[in-house]
Image (cartoon, rainbow, N blue to C red; front, side, top):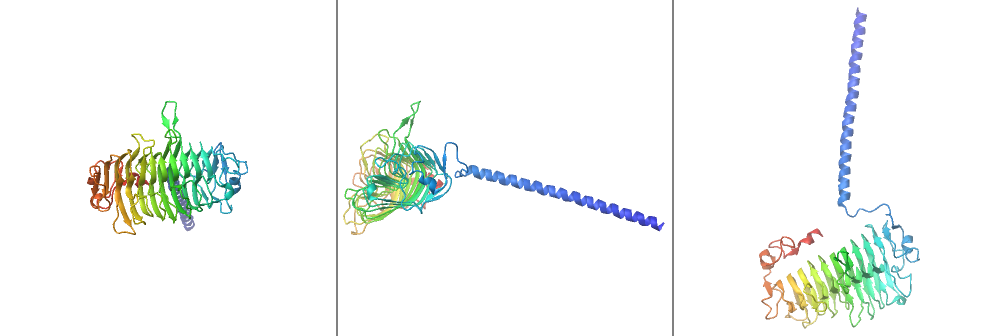
Length: 482
């Protein structure tokens, strides 16, 4: 009997143990299964987030060379532009960062192909959001009178998604056009490029048109089949961070700007520049310059300059442009500090009637530049404009200051010579003055009034302008996105 009870007890224990083991295994797989489901959900969530980031990230680099493109991976690939292996009419895509510091003196693309004529790049160069860094071009005397830049010329071509950093161009000789990206741009598209570099100009000869995007940019209007017009040259979404030094003292002056030496419409008003930010420093005893361009006859919108100019030059110096003729400038600004000999303007020095039409002028623009004049006599110095002709002027203002180092009192004009009939033009009357008779066109405000929305009749504070009431003067809404 005892033996039977022992067997029964043993059997019961075995049954209980089996139940526990089976239950444990089931629980293990159940828990493991839930963990796997959870992990799967997490992976799916991460994948969704990554996909969203990729969709939101416009700078996603291509990992394979697209059809009809040639991939540039190495410096040896880059050098094929100068051996004739790479045609200037093909399409190229950068597949790596290129550090050109090992190339002793880089050659502008296009120079080596024909010593008597510089052909233009006519294909597509996609920087693929990679960076070309540390290239130096020291223009030799044997190459004087040529266009200079990473590309010598771009004509009917496209350059996009390219970053250029720590570039340096040195010229001690006569040149035609100098641009860190390209000496000349014509009937082409430049988009989403960042250019950081240093231009050094020496000697007594003309260096021509100088800028960090291009020395000269121009385009002709193209008509579509439905007779709608397109700009021949479009330069958009670019950033410049540049410095200009040297002792060049060409007596007739050069055309120097932060983005362009000159940007023009050609014969049919076909050049547009949009969403370009320029940070420019000029440090020289002899070189003058302008924040955006020296001369401008293009369609320019949503562009801004931040200048730090210190020169003893007595040629024109301006926060944005020296001369506009037949240009349309909208939603643009100039900021910063200028110290110069004379002929200084915080925004634009003068307008010309050449190419004048009723749709040329400036609208929704401002200047906030502190000007220091080194001479003891006022030579055309103004906060916004020095001279205006018949171009329209609407919704503009100027703040900042004008000071003279060699005299305690001097003319501090908002606009010195007014021939236009502006609409809604305001200035800080605690800093600037206007000529007698212009009171009906130009409105002076106190420093505090300059910071009040109600002071600016006609300004569109819903779509174009914004203000930190009581703390700042108006600024352009698009600035928040940059």
